[in-house]
Figure 1 (cartoon, rainbow, N blue to C red):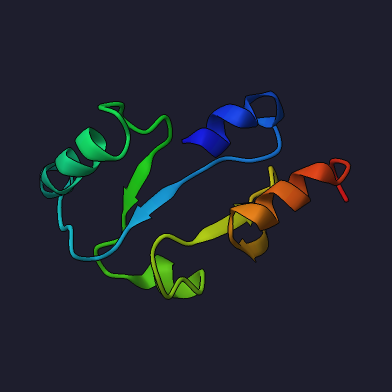
Figure 2: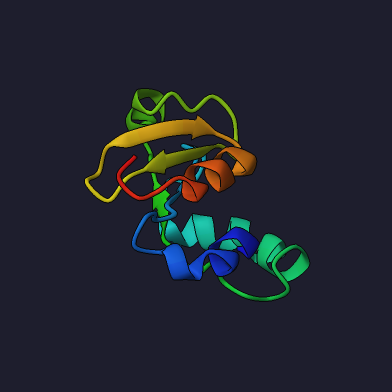
Length: 99
């Protein structure tokens, strides 16, 4: 969430989508799993970006996600730019748009 807030002026260059692993089969189940995380780690605030369920695991596999959390960068055209950590995102956002 800090990254999202820190780079709010660059929101035209990225979007954050959170994928939950296949253990949560419904949004109700996901809400229950997130309650302690929201309370203990996020200071009672909900995430400002969508959390997606991938019940089959197909999307996670296609994106090459092997562990959580994982960061990938998708450009405004919807193309996968790069995968890595938050430091990688910082470096990518320092580059001129479209590079």
